[in-house]
Image 1 (cartoon, rainbow, N blue to C red):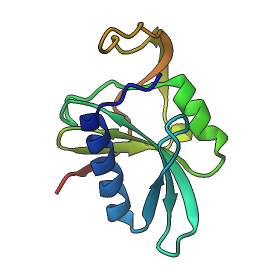
Image 2 (tube, helix red, strand yellow):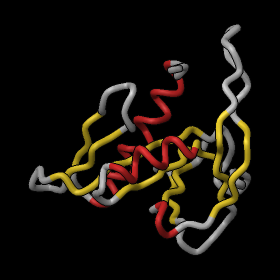
Image 3 (cartoon, rainbow, N blue to C red):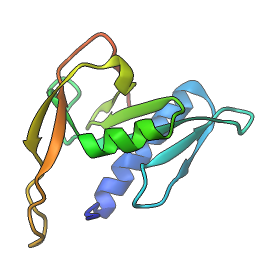
Length: 137
């Protein structure tokens, strides 16, 4: 089920633009049923893939950071520098899943606009050294 609002998509775009601006390069939005982005270096060579998750909180209050286990698997299946980016109100938190330690729980987001509640296997990440931060400018 895809339930991203226009506001979600704008938050996601701001996050990926902040990330690629920090390191140079560019990005390409992928199919709605895929992960979110393909990331390129300054020479247009594919260097990785990213999944962006909205977190309507400040970076300080964002923990634990949630993501569906299903999305992590899709991301890692790309086999090239997987990256998870959480788009907070004041910046981004990002990390590579192979460097993160999380807790797995059954969960999911409450349904939107009368949609059925999808229970999912979720991974929750607490604050850790492998996570990086960039404030929005």
